[in-house]
Amino acid sequence: MSSGLPEPWTVRFSKSKRREYFFHPETKQSQWEEPEGTDHQQLKQYLAEHPLRVRCLHLLIKHRDSRRPASHRSEHITLSKEEALQELAAYQQRLEQGERFEDLARERSDCSSFKRGGDLGHFAHGEMQPAFESVAFALPVGAVSAPVETDSGVHLIKRVA
Ligand SMILES: Cn1nc(-c2ccccc2)cc1C(=O)N[C@H](Cc1nc2ccccc2[nH]1)C(=O)O
Image (cartoon, rainbow, N blue to C red; front, side, top):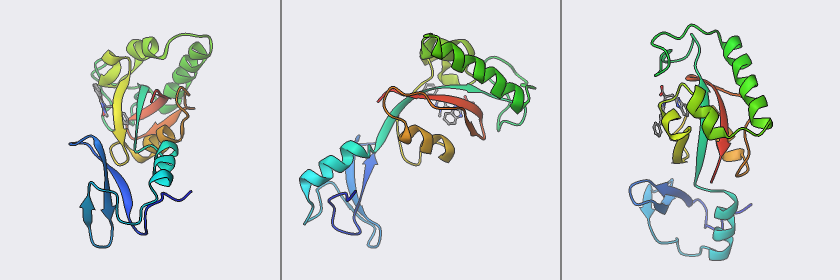
């Protein structure tokens, strides 16, 4: 689907101003205003289907090969990746039985976001590890991912916005 922007303009999200801006990758020009020749309605439709940022909860189980094999739960994590995946499968079943994602993240996640029920807040492209980002942006709102492996460990991701 076309963005409605004249080539090669792109649209990005400014964290500091919390709004989209427009960037020309060849001239490196950036601006708040829609570039001349933008199809405004097409751009709005595009952004509705290609959000510049999403909001997700996640439940992370670290293992001995994680980038930082430690968390509030354990100073020295020795779980194997296979054992972490088995444990994550048990949490998937509990979700399927109706338990709340936030409750399970609080109970088990090795990410410091556990205290917020795994809520990472909103993030844009480029802020999270690529494997996590691609799954998070592909999830429909309200959906929970299959297990996702990153350098941090293995995750379940729930997109909430
Ligand atoms: C990306 N992030 N946000 C928070 C966070 C957010 C809101 C409130 C408190 C902490 C923690 C983290 C973070 O990197 N945590 C790491 C673990 C981790 N690695 C991740 C990789 C991708 C997404 C989330 C991830 N969380 C840690 O605690 O060792």
